[in-house]
Length: 180
Image (cartoon, rainbow, N blue to C red):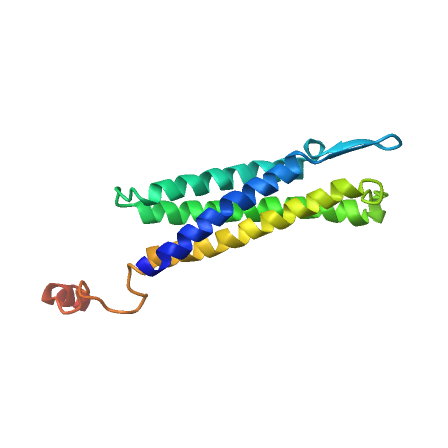
């Protein structure tokens, strides 16, 4: 597992600036127009969710980097595996929420008479797209981290169907119980 230590730390380090940049781009995203009014990220719940999850991902990445030097408790690998999975799933859900909003902003929805708005709020849509792209890069890092932490946890166990030294089929007491 030592072979994955450097790539794992590099991925965790990469997530921090990606998530913070995505958070910053979206949190500072606003545009005012005399004709159509003002639009800002906080008006749209999917964008607020993206900002919150980026904050969680960055904070967790920093925490996991700091904790990696203190593997003092036996379930450390399991905790990191579960947390990597959870953050990866949160990043997926927030990316899909933001992508849906961008899709509607760019193309509208004619069935419900909702027109596209990016032609009026182009800079706002541009910043939201950049934020989503940075978010997707952080998500890619977390997918790789989830695979690495999963490999680290599950490589400690033999694959199903492979007998190990603790197999009790050679134990006469076990054979006797099986014969009953």
